Image 1 (cartoon, rainbow, N blue to C red):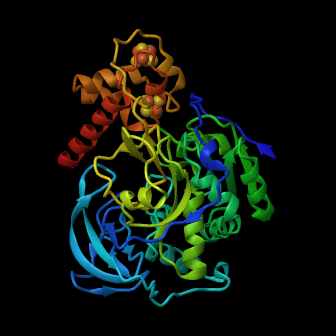
Image 2 (cartoon, rainbow, N blue to C red; image 1 turned 45 degrees about the vertical axis):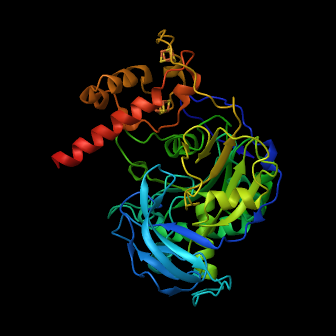
Length: 438
Ligand code: SF4
Ligand code: SF4
């Protein structure tokens, strides 16, 4: 087992993975009505190509990519389009969604499968990844075909398949590596061909021996490396730094140091798309938390409302204070359980009253613990102050845009200051002002 280097900062939060890590993935049946958002990725919304009243097949295109920084969406079931309208979304905003009434027949659209897709040429592989609506399933949602196609003249040196699932509670990637190792490796080979990457790594935490063994058994010539199990070892920049020793420059992108990072679930989605002709219409999600009697990892059709997920796995056994989608450190609390599962929904956590409460913030005592743990080498206490006082130019100068929003600073702060909240605010304002002035 080759262990590689490390990255700056980081923390050791309580893992909270034990209740789901050893549970095999279970299939969760589709509900009667599915809500498929047009925005499940970074970039612009997809454009509908169906209308209310249309009959659709499973896997049929519902909406095409809005532009290069976008991704198409497909129907997770066969049935009828009953509405195209704004619906609750995990981001907390209302996002236009295509609502499908499930006919229960699971009738597939014609699929373009291939027994040995690695034989396809790189352009065809890239095209099929784009057409299948594949985006970063680790939570960032970056369109995968766009990521694999760096600017002209740049050929990546490294493709790193990221299995470092550092978020507390989340074990969906762990189960994908254990149960679908062959698919992950096939996806890695296909993406290596599509991008032209010279060297492929699979990186995972050094605390997941079962996943390591499963991946290693299928990896062939692909190098499997382990990283220290310190949060956020799965951050894109942190994985690159740990595996290659290279630092992505401030304000830069991974391809500037010759690296591409793709999540393991995304790699599996690429294999399904190219080998079986299946677009991205379902994903493995960790459903966990004290109020649930059957926490586990479930393969869920995209567009399934959380309410249906919870009811299908026997409901909440006790009172719930909060439901968070996207992980304990950086996920968002949900106001409405009609919010559907999306391509980027890694983990759903239900908290009981008294758990995960937000204590009152106390004044900063200048202990610098937030500085010590920041993996981006920033000064979180200063960035928070700049956000709070709307000093956005200062926030930019002090590198706010390099913040990866890991929440390590806020986790460690003894004064319980809402550091991430104000840093996010500053980042949003900087980006919004740049858009206006461009
Ligand atoms: S400032 Fe950003 S990158 Fe640094 S610890 Fe806080 S959230 Fe993470
Ligand atoms: S960890 Fe909290 S109290 Fe300590 S310097 Fe940072 S913001 Fe201030």
